[in-house]
Amino acid sequence: MTCPCRPLCLVPKPNCTRPANALPRHRATGPALAELIMSLPLFDGLERDVLQRLMADATALACERRTLLFSAGTTSDCFYIVLDGQVKLFALTPDGRESIVEVFTPVSSFGEAAMLSMGVFPLHAEVIEDATLIRVGRKAFVSTLRQDHAVAYRMLSALTRWHQRLSGEIWHLKVQPPWQRVAEFLLALTDAREGEALVALPFNKEVLASRVGIRRESLSRVLARLREMGVRTEGNAVRIDDVGSLRRLCAEAGA
Amino acid sequence: MTCPCRPLCLVPKPNCTRPANALPRHRATGPALAELIMSLPLFDGLERDVLQRLMADATALACERRTLLFSAGTTSDCFYIVLDGQVKLFALTPDGRESIVEVFTPVSSFGEAAMLSMGVFPLHAEVIEDATLIRVGRKAFVSTLRQDHAVAYRMLSALTRWHQRLSGEIWHLKVQPPWQRVAEFLLALTDAREGEALVALPFNKEVLASRVGIRRESLSRVLARLREMGVRTEGNAVRIDDVGSLRRLCAEAGA
DNA sequence: AATCGCCCTTAACCAACGTCAAGGATGCGA
DNA sequence: TCGCATCCTTGACGTTGGTTAAGGGCGATT
Figure 1 (cartoon, rainbow over the protein chains, first blue to last red):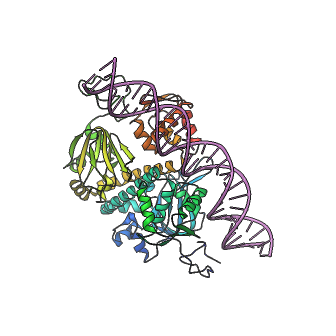
Figure 2 (cartoon, chains in turn yellow, blue, purple, brown):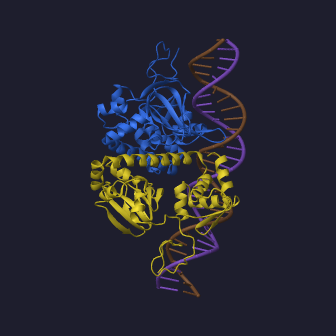
Figure 3 (cartoon, rainbow over the protein chains, first blue to last red):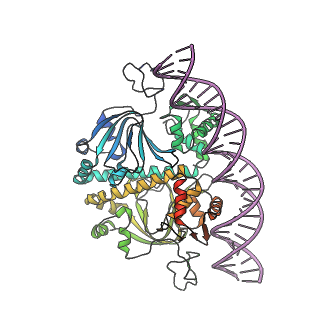
């Protein structure tokens, strides 16, 4: 039996026959669990004991691929933390098509917004790669929030950062052509400022295309054109010959 | 002397010669000032005395059109509330073009995100229609926030609502063709669910185009095509013959 | 009246994205 | 080994949005 995280594994399951030297998917590597959770933007800077109170009625979930966590319109009485695997948030058009708004990879959280405004989920959520999640109930979460208002304050600045990220995304969608959004997405996966870089794609190309707002076929064409700029795709990884020059290309063309 | 809010005025200046029977620009009408401010999503549900403490070192500003409030990169030590007029938040591309990320009309606030995360403004802000603003300093605001954590909690849910609005916008940009974004923008300006409606555009077409992520010329084309669907533009207003059918058109075509 | 500036519209052209269709690569199970 | 499913790529084609350029309407200024 091989790992479901095909074609590459970061944390192979027992008896996984997949070659281990392959480039892993792009995901956070894992120190201690609490450490991971505290790195969430939502919980940035929280003390450990406060966190534990917050997590009072949290439950851990092991979800298989294609598990539907919730669908749009459902009342939202919890939010989720992704410890492993991947979850997509998407909308459905009347004709059955789906559009991925966001893909969550370890370690991140989603659904807080819907939960805190005490409404319903605005989107569907589905596991697209076998995942381990933490489901945090609304009740305990909100009550802890009321008891310890400092928590709320911390979360405020975390959310405002989120806010800025979303605004930035809107701007990208409005002013950048697709190839630039793809290029910047790739560049965001590496810390390198110049020279060669080999980045692992966080998810398959279908999902990636949806993330940047284009179709699968268009992504292929974009990558084909980027090839002339020294961006070669190698399996689920992408080799960038010269990160510096690619960054410059993006910057000078309308970013 | 006529009003700068051409070609139509809601609140004519003294001696304004502009005809008064014209349809006003779409903007909130004004009861008491405090009432207005408390209707901000950011301050939703705040008690009046708390609000006054929050506003301790706030100052009122009367800004003429084309006033640059701040530019990207500036350290953000305040945020703004728009009581009248309009302010655009925009980014500049290297070749000097601008892209409007958001237009703020009465009554709304902007810049809190940058201020609370103690960073710098990520965008430029310019008054595009003579405005009266309130500038709230970071220091008093944050200290009040620390003293009264309930305020922070209230703001949390307000921000999460904002968050959802932004997510929705991203989704629109990804899955909807421009004509639908325009149509939905127009529909959002009226409460009518069916029948005829006459809506006043909140800003000129250049800005509107930028808001929905297209160019001025494309907006003209879109409006021309919408004309066949019973959407006629009349000056800075738009008459929708049948709101119900337009809503249905948008809904069935990928919303 | 004449002129200017601003806002908006239209047309022609081109590049680019979506769509449809076909086919290749890979991994898995029979 | 074969068949099948999934994922990816490529080509042809139609549509559409950006670009450029030209011009009209309107108010303000002279």
